[in-house]
Image (cartoon, rainbow, N blue to C red):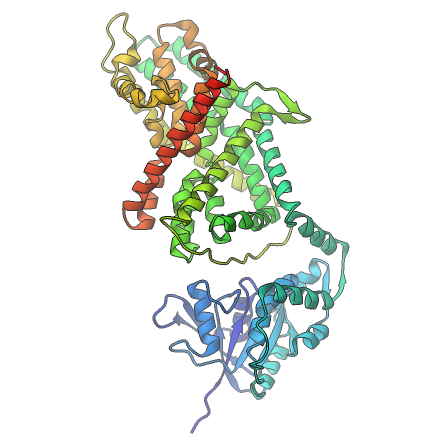
Length: 619
């Protein structure tokens, strides 16, 4: 009777280099399939020991603990415990640790070692640790863990022969008896022990590595970290206004000159009005905010590239746990600051269905980049460009407050939802923190170009189309002599009807009209206002020559402007977002609920803002 081949399993945290080690050990001798009954990939290959004997090597999905929180982690637990259908229990566990992130990886390592199974540790990516100024002592780590520790560099095939020999030796060792009387070890205790073992294994570290460690102690400090994060965000929004002003003024001047040229060149006609009042005034009013979009994403991409964004997620996890969500929700919500559509799609990584549903429902409350043109034009028109402190502009402060209002509103809604319609306990979350590094100019430039192109494409397609449609609705039927063209038009009729409902919260006809096409894209609210005032002032040269901000100041009061801003903090002004929410929730029930509660919040917030401003004597 032939002896069953030895089975060894590669186990470790995500990003430990398991797959690279698996490929290096097995070469082309691999089979890839799915585990029976699940969609998790099964990778198995043949490892040849120095003795010439074959070993079946299995690459298990990355895991942060044996208490599974995802299908991947569940498969890893079942394989290790011998409970997975179609997979025998491994004879040897190969525990793969990232040398440059040793403390984090030693937390899960303790759980695996406590099983008492024959285990070998592959101390992987030691070259990257040395590059970052960290030299480790494998012997000290081996003494602390009680199992062989082999330094490896999978991509350079360093240490592979020694690792294969250690696997062969471990195969013949008996399992250690488990102490049933041993008390349960808590996660904080595991983390403390991991810190002690990682510290003891350090032979030397350069000033660079120490600086990185000190930075984490400061930036991730529970008291110092959040103020630093909010101070950084505050600086970002100050820069959005102060840095963008000369570029925005240049684009605005170009748009105005193009409009004047068209009026001077073309004969008076509806076609000229379409070009000047519709295309140039409407689309041009949105293009003016391209510099602010670029500056905002410059900071976002820089924070991502340096590794700080992941640390911001770690800090926000504490806040999210307080409202019943886990840190898994942070990445989708962070994506929603660019656009809620990819943010909602990113919730697929959330394993808890109620966590996922709650995240989908609050994602539209994150202040996406499409809101920025709306905020910018209103703030520039009504908020003085004055200083309220050293280097602190009032306009940037107001913009910062709008973003914070969206975040606070989302957290409050999440708390209410988790205690009512999506009631349930928050799931745990562990995040791998990337190394600090300087962003490359090429990658940063490419990212900014992609964001700018997306914005320009929207301006040239969706915003252009909606603006043309709005211009047509504003110009037909034609008004009688002495009659206001906007009131006589189809769009004006619709707006006058809607303003009856919105008048109690301070909205006039033009504001009511602007939020209708903004359902296609939030930026269209700006082009809608520009087109409306261009059509309305077509017979008044003085009015027609006024910039959009001046038009707003002459027709709105400050309480009306503040109410309009409050509306856009909460209103679900994007049909594409609703369509994606329907697809991700498999029906219209939750998107309809989302629409209802967001519009109710927007109405209440605008009303409270308007009447509070009136009571304060602001208008």
